[in-house]
Structure formats: structure tokens, C-alpha cells
Image (cartoon, rainbow, N blue to C red; front, side, top):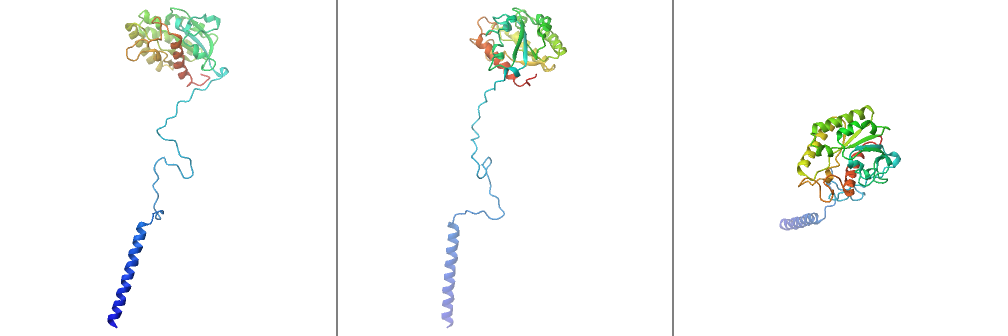
Amino acid sequence: MGSAAAWVWRVVAAVAAVIVLLGVSLAIAAPRTATPAGLAVPVPENSPSPGSAPSASPSVVAADPEPETIPIEQRPVARFLGDSITRGMTEPSSGVVGEYSWFYNLIDDTEGVVRYGGSVAENGMSTAWMAGQVWTALYPTPDILIVHGGTNDVSGEITPPVVVNNLERIRLAAESAGVPLAVCTVPPRADLAADARALAVNDAIRAWASGNDVIVLDTAAPLRDPVLGGWLPGYTTDGLHPTPEAAALMSESAAKVLREIPLGV
């Protein structure tokens, strides 16, 4: 009996071992769909929450939106003070602006950002002449005064401090009238020596403007050859004045800055 009982216990133990091994095998093979209690499931960054729509790929960059059209009646009234680049091929007193005036597109019905309030501009004039005409330009009082000068100063080899002093006279007059002032940069020159003087004047304008709450419109930037200096090909016919295509770029450059200013200026 003792021997028979021993064999029975051996059989029972063997069967139990087989059952245990079978259970372990099934546990290893089964898919793990549950998370143990107390452990959080790691979520990759930028993964959508359950039930939400998948987000756009981070490598896709949205294009800059087209600028909205500003209704004409909401635009600030601008008066323009300058030389032949401002006057273009038109008579300022007629109220009609031609495509050779640098600001032609700046007052366009759809693309423009200001209303035309008139201009004081004559061929061949320097910033000293403009300083003497500033009160004419400020009457009737506009919402903003925009000055484009310096080309003839560069031709006459007027030094940057003198140009800035003339612009300061304009600024003081505009300030006393409560009118914000915007000043354009001087266009490139075909002659590289004159172009170097234009660059020096522009540096002086920026330094002066930054300390005097003057808006700088870098209308010269899209016209300049960044490698060779001077004008980009096709943007001038005489080395001094912009073509209508170049004038459109000048307007666009100015509009980008003026759009950031409250409509009431």
C-alpha cells in the first residue's frame, strides 16, 4: 500500500506541473490589451485626443494670408512731400496720380492703405526745399505726412547730417501740427559712388528716426541689388527714377509697414 500510495502522489504531482506549465504558456502568448492598475499609458507629443480629428502635419506651413482690403473711408488721409520721384508724370494740384509716382499703388482702391490727400512735390528739389514747404504740405491737416526725399541731396553730395537736419525741421513742424511723420529711404543709384552716399544717408535716416518716433518706410530695399549694389536690372531707365514696376514695389513695401499702424494713425 505504501508503494501504491507513493505512485499516486507522483502522478498527481506530474499532472499539476503540466497544468502550471500550460497556464504560463498561455499567459505569455495572449495579447496584452490592458494596462496594469496605477500605470499611465505614455502618449506621444502632439497626438490627438480620443475622438478628435488628426492634426495637420507639423512640416506643413500655412501660406501668409492675403492682406485684407481696407475700405477707403476707413483709411488715414496722407499727404506726400517730395521731389520728382513723388511727383512722377502728374500735376500734383490736379488730384490725379500717375503710375510713375512712387506711391501710385499705395492709394489704390483695392491694394492701398491710405487715402490721397494731395502732394507737394517738384522736380529736382532737395530736403532743404521740402523743409521750407512743410507747412504747405500740412494744410489741410492730414492724418499722416509721408516724405520721400534725398535723391537730389545725394546728387549734390549733401552730407547725411545736413539731410537729417532738414528732416528734423519737417518733423518738428509735423509734431507741432499733431501729424505723424513717415520718411522713405533713398533709392539706389546707378553710379556706385553716388550709391554709397545714398546708403550713408539711409543709415543716418534710420538712426535719427529710431529716436524720434518717425516711421521709416524702406521703399529702397526692393529696388537694390543685394550683391552688386545699385538698382536691380529693369527697375530704372535713367539711374535715378523708378519704372512703374519699381514704383509698385515701393508702394508694396510702404503698405506692409503702414498696415501695422492703427487706422487712425
